[in-house]
Length: 195
Image (cartoon, rainbow, N blue to C red):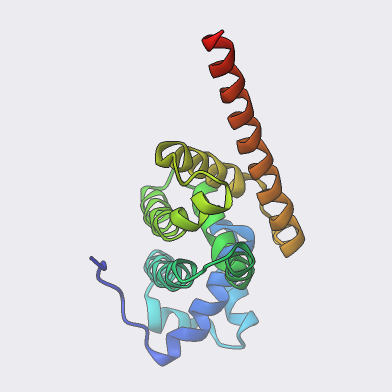
């Protein structure tokens, strides 16, 4: 079920886009009305006309992020190969960096809630492809566990500079190698136990 969203008006859009970009890069500390107004060439009174205060603006940003996460999840759900998935991830780099900031600042309950919702959207949208890429289609529990740990690690590592196609490709290769090593070790233990 889709949660209720705050409807954006035309005059709010430039503020939201700039605030979203700044939040993704610097977190909530970067959200200063004067700075945002200079970036979009609007006066501060325009901000207060549209949002009343910074807390309301942040609510709009979180709702916008939920919308972006739903768009990303739909695209991920349609992916049939790892290169397609990597392309979607790169396309939504800013959304992932925004989510990273939510994770970093999750001591705020509204940030934690938004992070959890968006993470679950992504989790559900990539699980089947993820299992296939890592060769874990026969072990759903392990696939979910590896995805959970990998997502946590992913958000610890990504930056605007590091989140590239090459980095993502290497990240998936490392995960695949780790899973393959686990499988080899499990098979060895089974053989040793049978002897």
